[in-house]
Length: 366
Image (tube, rainbow, N blue to C red):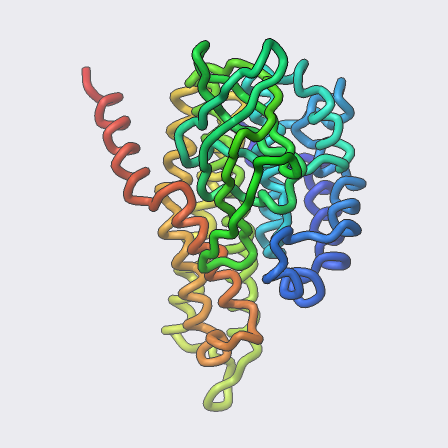
């Protein structure tokens, strides 16, 4: 595992950071889309695709870059730092990994190609709920029934990837979100930069893609957790840097507030938390591709178990900002909400701490 970025990875990071600053800033892009159900605009999404970011994890044979989760994590961190509200994580990470991990590359070739070139937006419908039901009308036509909660970016997505059960077992199906029998209901949360929906499938036509194993499905969930951890790391890093810069320039009693020991301690606490999270995220991104399944899962558990600590960075930053940090006009509260949504994503940290402790205890037994 290499802890230093290569020249190509640095270029990817800097290009993504520059693009987001110029074309998708918080003031000009994020805030205007807080109440938009899609969280994106065609020009910005087209720009991300033209940079190659949507196809990072798509195999080269389907027009992607064929890169690893490490490169994807670099982009995810920059998107988190910019509070990007669009469906990049759902499409470029979740959907791309689901199609490749679950054995759907052949049946899903057109989807992978569309993800790579930015013409297809996709999301996963099996992050929280049990599989829905599938009914075959004949040898080729299948319809899906059921409800799926907390589906990210469903309003922006062209395709929903869902797990469904029929008499033959469990399968991965693609459902067009504009199909008859598909309805979306917004699920509002504290974080307006994250768009999620309850999806109802009422005899919605689906297309069979693969018959995944439980282990492969678990691997996709780990990938999603790890990618979201990278996004949260970016958000924590950005709000920490904002607070530190504010402490250098904001004066009180004739001197910068950063000269006061109490404020210095707050800044050090934030820095320590961010850097501890960084080491865990880097390891998890590496493990997603190169470690054995047990180590990969443990790395995902660690990243999520640390989520509560990472969320405190936003809270501490607001303490440094003082009264201005509580105002709607300041961006600090948006970062805090992003970090709180990460802490609550797919259950709270306590759940993961319990599982992590149990697994480590079992591993240590003779």
